Length: 411
Image 1 (cartoon, helix red, strand yellow):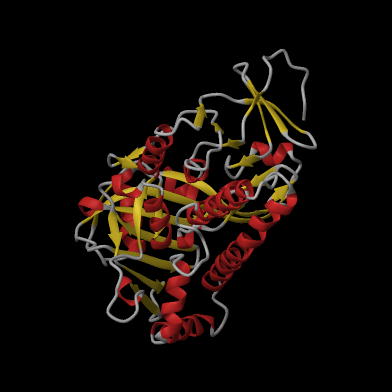
Image 2 (image 1 turned 45 degrees about the vertical axis):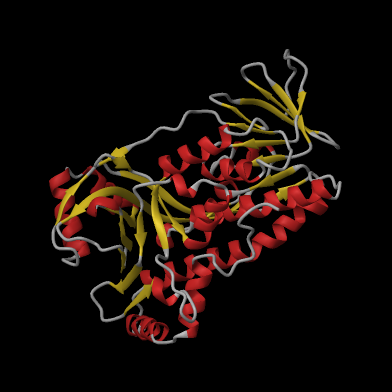
């Protein structure tokens, strides 16, 4: 798409990132010492929706991605986070269940404190912004919208609605599931609408969670209770659209009654719930993660069912792998907007992305059907995995990102 413009001359920069959320900022911060001039374009200031005085939107950052954030100099400044020391999963009211414990992650005498940490999205974004603003080579244009983007053979041109304009060898789309940049590039998506919504809120249970995350699989979708500081929990309740709409229409007292009946007395009675939000659950995969002079990362490239809480973790890994490919290309004087370079990023990321998409789809189908004999088979499978030792440890190391070939710092 291109328009006739009455703007100042385009400023040449090295990289344009569309989207200043957690994933876009991670990509920029990863390149802070690369010598590249990176411009991030974000159309709006972040809006924080509070629930019991906590951000309603949270992310379970797995241990491998904690290491990434440590390498960026971000993690040590994030306070008031609760380690997820273990996770208990069970199948509705049936006997099948499994527990993953951080102590099983290590080998020999070495053990880990946590599988990951639950972080309020706004806090993580704020700390990324602090690191971002410490580097003159990183530039943020916000709030501002893109008027046009034009792809040329050797660069891409972007003009903003405030009169600014930039040209760069590469543009990165980190602008979410409904990516404007992806649409402008005419890149379609494979998608699967689950016919569900995810309800998120902060709750206060009667008993302390002790750093344990709980997930109960129901015929209508999973209900997760994730540990926060001060004894609070964040819920992610996936339910069919009609049921989700009914739950959202309830007042706080009635919603608590349904929540207590559904989750059960594992943490005693859930005594308080903050403001709720709901969002549709749709799995997506861009038909092309890269095009000439364009790469997609995070939700712009893929979205998955939140039952494992791994969506933002995929995006952070995208950002780091792409940043490393860009830094390597610069070092060897390659044009990092060319498909030869961008395909290296895509080939590294597709196995991780496709395996998680397939796993989440498989889990969703497995736990939302009750064909004869299937509940018993699910229970047997969970017990076998729980007692499998090395197989269980390998599964945990992969799900926490510890085994994946993702750089923790850009070299």
